[in-house]
Length: 414
Ligand code: PLP
Image (cartoon, rainbow, N blue to C red; front, top):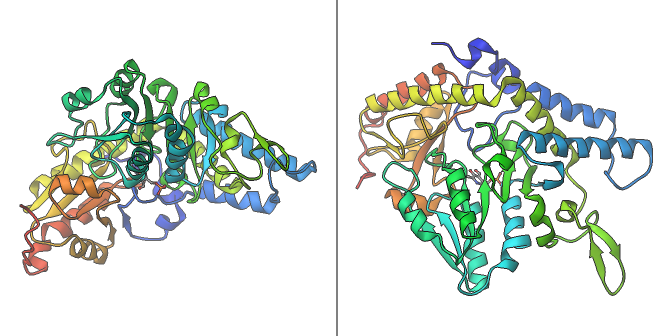
C-alpha cells in the first residue's frame, strides 16, 4: 500500500521521528516539528533578536519585517488578509480574546449563544462564562449517534435571539468535520456571528476562512508542526472596529495620557505586549512546509490511514469507536475508542510499552464524554508522518489487550 512516505519522505523531515521508532499517534494534542521549522527558529536567533515595532535600528526593522511577513504568510495559509490576523498564544487565547473583545459586549439578557455538545473546553467555558455574565442563554446542540451534527436540532436552535454560533471545525474527540458552510449560511440568515475553532483542522485540511465565511477563528501553532506558545486568531475585516482591546499594554496603543488613552484601530490593538516573534516565524515556516506537500495530499493520506484504522477496529473484539464508525468521510484522523473492560490508562500503558503514543482521558471535553456515556476514552490522532506500520503496531497491541491484561472487567460500557 502506498503511503505519503512513499511519495515524500516525511518521517525523515522530523528529527525526533527520524531517530526514534515511536509510533506517535497523539497529533491532536501536539505535533512534532520538521527540520525546516527548527532551522527557521535557529536562524532567527543566530541572525539577531529584536523587539518588533519598537526601534528604528536596522536589526529591529528587519525583525519587524519578519514578524509582519509571518502575519502575511499565515493569512495566506488560512485564506484571509494579513490585516485580519492577530498572533496569540494559541487557540485558547484566541477564543478567549474573541469572547471578551467582541462577544461579551454584544451579549445581553435574552440573547443566545449556540455551541455543539462536542466542544473542547476552550470553546465551551468561555461561552458559558460570557452567557452568565450577560444574562444570556447557552444552547447546546447535540450530535447524532454517528457523531455528526444533528442538523434538525441545530436548525431548530438558531433564531433571531442567537448572537453567536461557536463550534469546532473538527471535533477533537470524534474527528467529525462539521458542515461549516451550512452553519454559516443559517447563522447569517439570523444575523448571528460564527466563531470557528480550527485547532483540529489546521494542518490537516485545506482551510480557507474567507470561503467558509466565518466571522472569527482561532488556531494553534503546535498543532500545525510549529512551536507551542503561539497561535493566531482571525477577525473578519468589517468586525475589527466592533472589537475592544482586551489586554492592555505596549504595542496596542495610539496615545497614552495620564487621564485617558486611545488604542490602535486595527487588529494590532489585540496584540498587547512583546509579541512571540520566533513563534510567528515558526508558524510561517510550518505553513511553507505544509504547502510544500499540499494540504489536499495530507488530508487524503490521513483519510486513507483513517479508513485503514477503522477497518482494524472493526476486527478487534471489544473495541468500540465513538462517533462515525464505518467510513473515513466527513472526518479526519482522530479516532476515539473504548476497550470493553479495560481502563483507558491501561490501554495507553500497554500501547506505550509497544512504542505507541496515544492520548487517554476526556480530551478537555467532559460534556461530550457524558453524552457518550463513558468517563474517559482512548484517542488515536494522526499526523502527516504516520504510516500503516504505526497503525498495525497499535492494532496488534489492541487485539490482544484484554488477554494480556487478564480481562479486568471494569464495566466501561453501559
Ligand atoms: N479546541 C480544540 C478543538 C482543541 O483540540 C484544542 C486543543 O487540543 C484547543 C481548542 C485548545 O488549543 P490550545 O491548548 O493550543 O490553546
